[in-house]
Length: 236
Figure 1 (cartoon, rainbow, N blue to C red):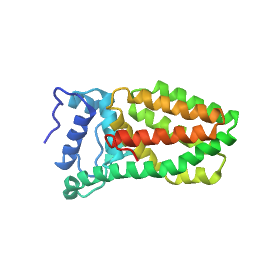
Figure 2 (spheres, rainbow, N blue to C red; figure 1 turned 30 degrees about the vertical axis):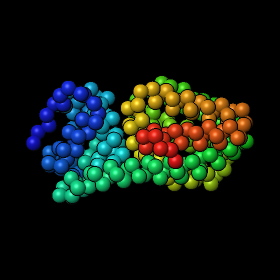
Figure 3 (cartoon, rainbow, N blue to C red; figure 1 turned 90 degrees about the vertical axis):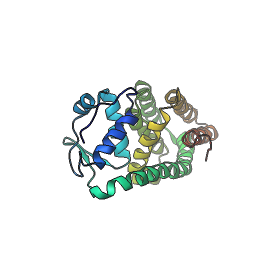
């Protein structure tokens, strides 16, 4: 099978399906290098942004690996197992998102409390710069994921509790993968990207004001909101 242009709805979801099918049927066998974003964009008849988001989603599902300076490669799975594993991987990714949200509420509300108590002007400046980056990245889930992680990690640093930072480091890869997977889903909701930025500003303002109660509440509301949106209305 050769890749065919995507007709009508030119969305990253359709690009994901095309690439997944190409992996299943052997067009892109395990371990092979995917064509460049530009090449896939031209072949599928979609914009490069849609291809980049599709590749990022496939990376979150661990179906492809991005090797810095070398390109994007199909994960080294046995070809006969790929079709059956895709649904399982997607379900696992969703479970990871919700389990990590529960863990993050526990960790990050505490981090917010101590950040409000111990933050310095240097910490506030770092968080403010990240918020500015979030505003510049509005509408781009892949870029927004990076700034989102930096924001939450900066709060852990502002808590000035080394063990909180170490705990965040230990689950960093899982959180970043979950952030991307959740953002790709959340960005389908009109206006959600702006709401998320507003929630991050509310957390920042509470920490700046050294209001521990408000900081904890703002973080809890933010993570509960994300959980509710991902589950179609049922919060944690």
